[in-house]
Each structure stands twice: as C-alpha cells, then as structure tokens.
Image (cartoon, rainbow, N blue to C red; front, side, top):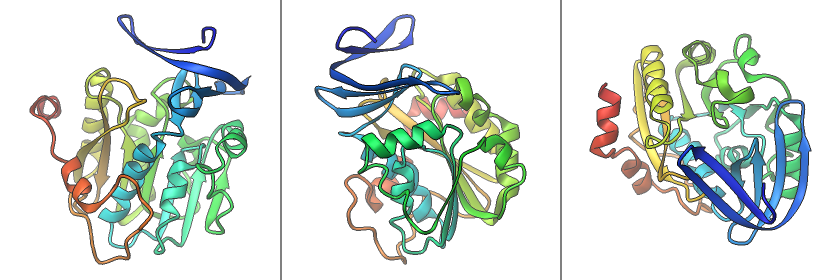
Length: 277
C-alpha cells in the first residue's frame, strides 16, 4: 500500500491502483495479511495479501453469480457447503433460497469472518441464519471427512496463493465429488481467462476429469481486474446451463436473472479454444 493509494500488481507489466480515503483496519492473521480500506470510488474494500477481494459497490455481481447460477441449476439444493467466502456474501445469497435446509460454511481464517461482520454488516448479514453451521478450519481437510453429503458445494476461494493454493487441485475436486449426493454439483471461481490462463485451463481440465459434466461461465466484476472472470461447474447429472424455473424466485437481486444465467455460458472463441487444448 502507498500513501492513500492501494496498488494491486497482477503481472510484472500490469498493475492497477485505487484511491484510498483511509485505512480502517490492518493486521497479519495466522494465514495472511488482512486490511479494510475506504476507497473513493468503490466504498469499503476487503484486502487479503494485497489483493482486493470485496468492494461494497460491486460485490453483488460476484456473489450473485457464484451462488445463484448453481442454486438454480439444481432442482432442490437443500444441503449446501461453502468453502471459503469468509466475508459472508456467498452465504447471504445462498440463504435467500427457501428450499435451503442447511448450509455448512468452512473458513480457515476466523479473522476474516470477524472483520467482515464488523466492517461489512450488509455483506455478512447471514451469519446469524439458523440454517448455518460455521466451521473455522481448513476446507481441504473438511471435505476428506464431511459430516454429511451435499447437493451443492461452492468453493469461494481467493487466488491460488497462500492458504488457497490447494483448493485448485484435482485431489481436492475428487474429495468434493465424494462428499456430494448422487446428483450433486460443485462450482469454483476459476480466475481470469486472460491473465491466469494456466490456472483457468487446469481447473477446467481437473474438474472435467472428475465430473461427468464440466461447464464454464463468465461475469465481469469491475474490481477484479483483467476483464472477464470465470466460474467452473462440475456436475454429476444436472446441466448447469439450464436454469430451473419451477422454484420460487429470489426477488431482491441486482444482477442475476434467468437471461443472465443462459448468457453467462456463451463463451468467446478464444476461451473455447483454451478449453480444447
């Protein structure tokens, strides 16, 4: 961080910066550097290891797309597991579905949860939902011996560095497959196809080698630099491209709808070519 600017470096030749009004909180947790800043354009933002994770102004795009696309692709997602997502945004969106009966959330860093509750109460608003079971432990170990089987697993991880690195491996996806029900599915954030091509392609290949069906969809999250951001779904049975309209709609959404659901799976040619390599 510089004086009143936050700099995020992506490659040796690509860096972005945001104007900061003030630094609200900063600490080194047992797992990572954590900061909360007030930006001029994007409201408060959560920073982990010098990478912007959440901003108040555009967080709804990421959280709605990682949650509602798979939730509406499954006919009855009653039992859900969220790995990561300590800010609470994905949890908030999942809890909007009346069909949900239980949601287990596994976050390795308790300080992310506590800080999010304090500085981002609207994002972290579902931590008091009665359906939630919060586990403050390593998600990699959790899926090796889960307490139940799930309809849906959402991997809401940070970039593949530090504590999140092992969340992008084939072994991890195999363990998720085994903790899903017979018609279960999983979704992961799979990075930018433009600047993290190797990670993006390997996630798709690894998921495709474990699940009968693997599909990629896209969204544009302005504070996630480099343009399109990708999500990859692994499904045992259900086609994630088909939004199921026979459940009650969630009415207070800002980004997701059934047209966006369908359009998100329309991939540009250069991305399709990456998936064919």
